[in-house]
Length: 231
Image 1 (cartoon, rainbow, N blue to C red):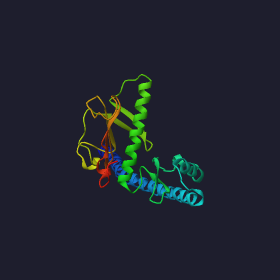
Image 2 (tube, rainbow, N blue to C red; image 1 turned 90 degrees about the vertical axis):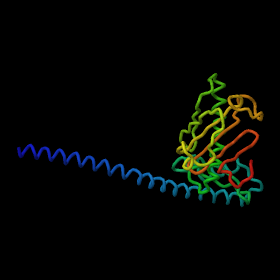
Image 3 (cartoon, one colour; image 1 turned 180 degrees about the vertical axis):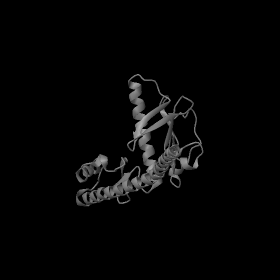
Image 4 (tube, helix red, strand yellow; image 1 turned 90 degrees about the horizontal axis):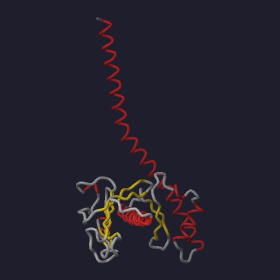
């Protein structure tokens, strides 16, 4: 009897230890993810600073009218591993500042969240157009969803037949979560009269903080463009 009780207690102790270990792992995962994000963000910021400094030096030394191609070439010289400039795989965009100097902007870590959303939205729409054209040339019918890769992560662009009530970030819009993208095709529920039948006439990209909405003839709107003139 005594031995049996001890065996039961040992088994119970083992189960409790396993449960405690699982709980500790579950508690540690969010903390690790936060730590990982902060470490990647810091590394990205340092890489962006190096790239920015290199572009400024190059601009001051020899540029009269710099082009995107010039900026890309300079980045290749300053940072040979430019495709991996962001440790988390963020897409690096080049935009001109008020002085006419190109600056690198990370699609994952830049502190200007609205700018980040606008750049990612434009890039996502461009990638979607390329994916659609490629699929059609190969004889594939339009799918309900097209997958693209943005910021080194897969993003599913879902086709819709009408405009959505999605003009803010997914964190403040019911029914959405994380990063999402939707598009509409002229002649398939949409009739803008601004593009040819079968072309993209509507596009929405939203992250947790903001949304960018494009409609043929109207241009870009949404919270990412709040306070800006329509483009």
